[in-house]
Image (cartoon, rainbow, N blue to C red; front, side, top):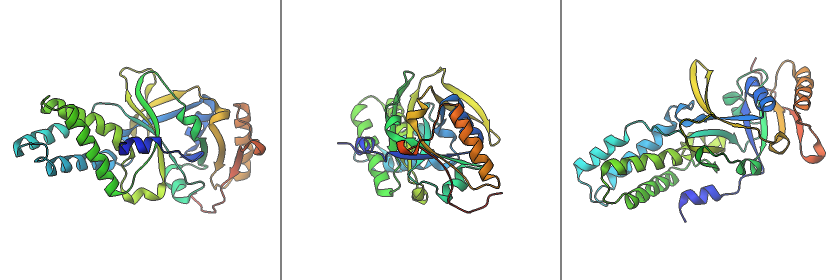
Length: 279
């Protein structure tokens, strides 16, 4: 069985945590929407470059194995340096509940929010205008990265045998854009990230939209009309100077939008136990 399929089939924890700011939290609850950001526009500019560089390096290292001359390998590498035009979007979560580094990195408002998401519900989400949608754990070990990259290369060379370098390059980049969102550098291992990956968004798609954020125009894929009672298990409010007032307001807001916090059913609204200040 392939390394990628083993990762896709891995059972997630029951609850995964999405850290976000107040504006996004209000939109998720009131609109019953989650927004999966286009992977090529992620905060970390090395997100796609890192796995692409691994791919280029491995093609050069293995060129003799596939009968490529130095010129052919260079030509293929040049084709792969062209930016991918396929659209893959990701919705990021962590196994880490109420984690200081996650608050600081992703919930940059006062207050910020940590939303506990039912992973089993996420795995059942489907939509008609994408090629694939799946929930997968990110991989941080460099040896595992090489295994995944080699799997891309092996499958592409097998499928495109005798079809020419242009077809081979196109197939390699198509596979890379699906694999690469789970390939993350070791420095980020503390995040323990899982991602809902929406691969091959059709163009045009009524669910593919744009927003303004952090001085940039960012494309995203919108997943709408989810069952808020089934999907959201808990909400945690970050440390903030008006935590009691915000707690009451958030409880009222969620109640008005159909999200009831019933501890007996495993659903709760909580205040962060961390005492850090970001104001």
